[in-house]
Image (cartoon, rainbow, N blue to C red; front, side, top):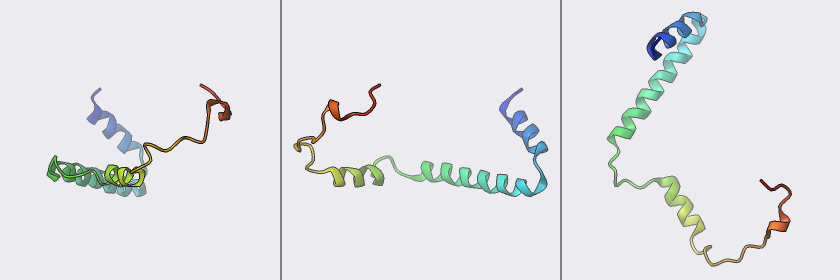
Length: 74
């Protein structure tokens, strides 16, 4: 069974009032996909840029914690 058939089978099991949520979610996914396709590759990632700006100058700071400060070790 392919993915489309599985989705169709699951949709058939949903009550009518939830199908609107599914429709809205699929529209959101399509919008998100189209936005990714239209953004040029050289456009900065604002989340990364913001994090880099916030962390600027912290590379040389001494960490106040040691391994002994950990409560759990993995």
